[in-house]
Length: 410
Image (cartoon, rainbow, N blue to C red; front, side, top):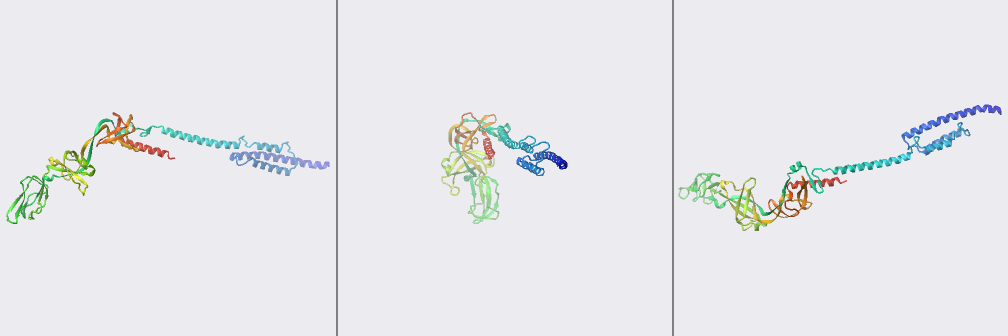
């Protein structure tokens, strides 16, 4: 027996030394593996996985060396329990860190959104040129000049009711002469061409009569301009055709077209302002004649002015515009017609609220003429308003409203 113990004791010591070496080698390697895995992915290995790994090592050790105590007196189970309680070698709780990270990202996003809204509100607070604030348009001095804005005072006065009519300059047919030969015959002379001016008594042509074979002169009955010629040397002429047409242009007719809606308002004796279309030529005249019937082709009647034409400035065939004063309108507060604009379905006038500051005011209007319109409500006398450039201000409001809707389309 003693000899068996003597031979077995070295073997047991060798086994214990071998176990101790395995233990020392296993513990540092496991710790190093844990640290490495935590640095790359703390959530990839759970406590249960690590427990299975430890159980596997311990079962293997127990199978090879069952009943062999740890030479250092360590309790593997206690060590394993301590390891399960320590999730992170750095002392961090992975689950706590994960929850804290999620909340932090949400808070950062909320903060970013709040900052963005703050920036938007700050931008809206700027006083941009042309933008409206409480209905007031703010402009720079340069913008006012570029828009052609002019300011006037509301004044008391009256409007003159009038109508505008189209027309044309025509010959004074009472001063128009159609020249025909007394006897038929052969033309021996044709003395004048179209555009020539002749005096009364001038010989226009010489014709040899077929009846008497004698020649006779054809003279100008009036002074005027040759506006038509139908005669050539050696031509046969007769009483059936005019050989010349003479026109005295010292007077001309202004024939105005009056349509049915204005027929009852146009009467002889009315004063008319006449302006040539396409030129600066202007004059005044009096209606001398109004046709009693309506032309079936033009659906209008004719109002005629006999116009003195000194210097032959008014040429037949010229188109004209005529304004006829029909009666006086009502009196009241006047503004320029261009000052009244339609905004959101209502008539408005822009008033001055401060230096380069304008605001629309809703008004009611009455009678008007070519330049002015009566304001029956909404303005007081001496109020400063935009007499020129009101359309540009209206355009800025419309544009500003469109931009506002586009900016809130998200």
